[in-house]
Image 1 (cartoon, one colour):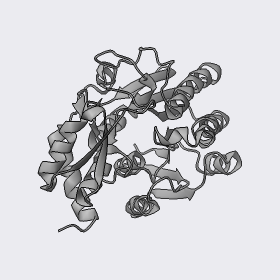
Image 2 (cartoon, rainbow, N blue to C red):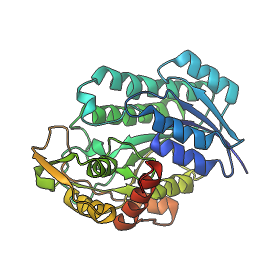
Image 3 (cartoon, rainbow, N blue to C red):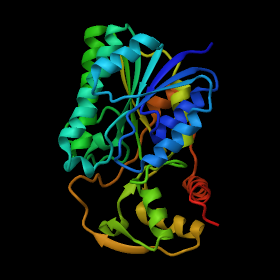
Image 4 (cartoon, helix red, strand yellow):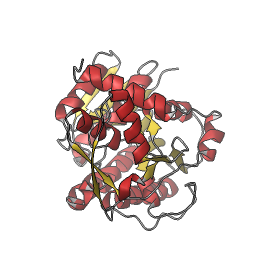
Length: 320
């Protein structure tokens, strides 16, 4: 049975891939303001893919504008809301804190208010592994303390989780926060490590790495993320939940660079610098909770994921 699903941030990386998957069986209403944090042309190219589907409808608007947002909710009356729209970028958030707070907190309250007013009971929303801050546990489980974020971005994501819990309690909404762990893949964000490193290698630019490349991330391939979201979309949840979505393996930045060099056939130029105050040292997702709900584990090996990304990049950038 098809559903009417509203996805905010539909021209974003995860948003586009998710909409594409959902459109196989559902009607999808996409919202995005197409901001200029990174290349608008990439966002427009993602949107072009979605506009080929007859069951896709797009509204260009900013979620901080409650009147316009509420009009869309009234017109569409969706069954489920998947809220992915966000100001992104850990380091950039220190330069523009008010913008991040406006979009990630006020904008999210607008989404929650619209859902409350229109009696939309199930809301999925994007959180982030950055909320774990300086936790030194080998694996990040959802029950760990997340009260000490290292960046404004992480603070806004933590705030969204707290707000979701309050709205769930007060207004009987089902809110499911998805803590994404360093998602990468085709049509990814240019400010993220794998895309940025790839572009730097091709353009003979130096790659700036922190702490001699010892930093580690749980790099999660986009297909795995979409698989999990699609798997849990129709599941029953009890009011407020938080779920990790990750690959369950910490991979050092140096290994990522080595794999990119092999796939591109070219050595990277390296520049070393100290780790910024905003950066988490290592991340590793515990997805025990997710597996219990989704009943299965999907894990794309980093070698395979990077190969797919580099092949896409060559085609997208017309590199022979």
